[in-house]
Length: 300
Image 1 (cartoon, rainbow, N blue to C red):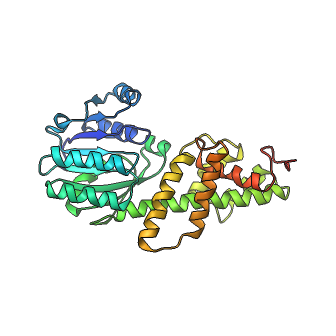
Image 2 (tube, rainbow, N blue to C red):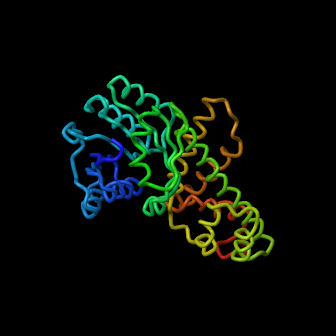
């Protein structure tokens, strides 16, 4: 397939799937899309992407199916359909954050049908997807990886192949564990500083100029310094990923005590009405537990 136009069908054009589909189209490939949400399909139509109902007919003549799905059940449903409807030689690329167990089930179904299943998880938020700045982590058949690279290079500057099995799924969970724990670390650090009288903006200036200045911390700096919790990834979404992380840890018998605590803080954020805000809203959970108000004063 390399070096020629591919016929691609994208299943799921949410905040990540739509920009990925658009980049494939502007990269010279023929792209059709399916999604159960009419509003997302309308946005895809505005981007010049052909809308096709998810059916066996949608896969006729297609080289690649690419999916961006919300959870295990959706992957199983789409994967089962691809295995039933897809002809031998079809390439199925899934970019979802799901459990390694569900992914392995789909891989077995696809293999039995002669469909190559490539797990291509991505690191980055919807803004990075829009800017084609995603990092792609892939695993599955090596030959499928080579076939997919012309497409994957349109999604961002970095593509990393990790192995023949579920390595990409686990690696995404490992990365998201570190992202969740970064938010927990920030929550404790900022609460301690504020309770001791440090100004939030001053702390952020020091953070971004110090040894702790990771890319994700820098990316969050302006919004959190202004106490803007507009979501790039919500508390609810992080809870879903943390449950996957803790499930993988249980299966592998790895104790993740700190991650389990962060999961509880996320639950507290939901209980306190912040579930739809950015996952960094657990900062407010820790502040409240420290007796701090939103304005930085000690709550009565």
